[in-house]
Image (cartoon, rainbow, N blue to C red; front, side, top):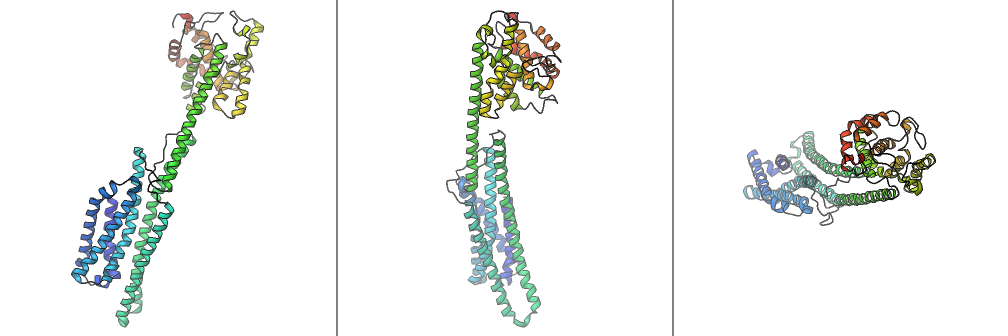
Length: 488
């Protein structure tokens, strides 16, 4: 409404001045006789637009609304031009040529106004679709963007040529009429003033159209870049509003289709990844009579510890939500190497002797080796890389006395350090052939005592802070083997 009002007011002022410049008959009218009909014509035009817009534009298909807006505004300007011409011919006996000049001027202004309002209608649809998720079909009523620009350039060129032609004809007639009655320099200044007025009006409208078109371009490319950038980072929730039946609409539609396809494929990959982990973890579980719910509990411990550590300044940069999720998914594979341990040792119903324990210790290296081939084939695969880290390093100790590589301090991957605390805690509360399941308090005390020797002190500190949560996980996922069967 504000844009339409501004266009109509500026058009009324410009037509009043332009008419005097190109039509000697209009120049003969008083100011009131000139301006009042023009204001009345634009008032009628404005009223007609308000009445016709909801029916001709608002009820049209989305693909046609901007074109209908263009046609309606241009048609009303032509209607006003013809109406003023007939009015002047009827009341002041103006010739048809005088009316044609006024109609051409109004048609030129109407073209600028119609294009601007049509572009504004496209912006309105774009913002609406961005908010509501609605869309249009760019293939239906398709109108090529290059064709639009070519037709617009041709129409504007013809209008400007017509205006200047009328101006030149009027000035030539005027020069013939006044003959030697006027100084040549005065005539030159008067003609240049008329040309300058037309040039400034045209330049102002051209600049307005460029700015309006740039706004539409900015809206489209902003949403396009947001959607593509988000998809590149794994966020598939953004969409590009499909708000025009042209190449931009097609690009938006195909971008959205690509993002939907990527989201679907990413989900399939994630599901395949999860299924792979479950299959491998289940394989380990069938080979280890000590696994059971241990896998689920340690998985939840790892996630709880990582979520707490992400607020620690030493770990905040590494523990992104994606990394924490990968730790969580990879944790069940920490004992995958046990599939390579002989049954006589793995399933022995007694405490292992020293040679047997040395063989059992090789499960960490076996787990690392088991995941080397898949990693070599898949390249940089996050969940397998972390699974390999965890399998290889969850028995390393902070002071360097662990196995298999006797890594020390931060040489041990963060995933392995977190898994070490989770694994030892659950082993302490679980029944083994050589010991009963310890109560929660005793297990926590042993973890506390291992800070700085067995475990990273910062991880132990976080573990102690979330002690109630750890205890709750152990209780909810516990079985007859946890806490000696007493608490669970």
